[in-house]
Length: 84
Image (cartoon, rainbow, N blue to C red; front, side, top):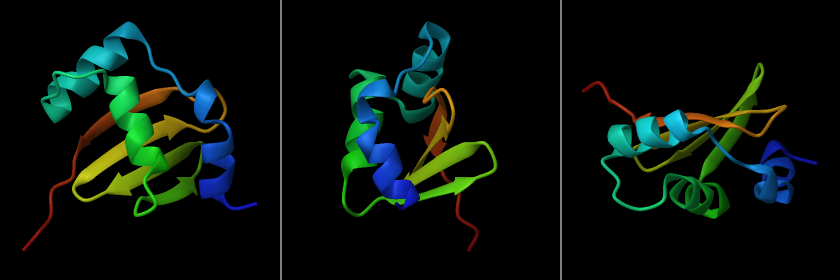
């Protein structure tokens, strides 16, 4: 099973803390539900999902979501910066 499949099979376990939700909304300038937004990124077919150490990283366009691989807690989400 790939990392992408494993994470998507456990999509219902994905959550965050109240402070985590506030941090994600601030980082991404969201007015909508941060958890739903992150789940949409995870389920998008274009999302690059990979596991590194104890975290999963989900990258779509210029957004990266970091999720703890054991607890399924969204740690953070932020805009990625690219170097020219």
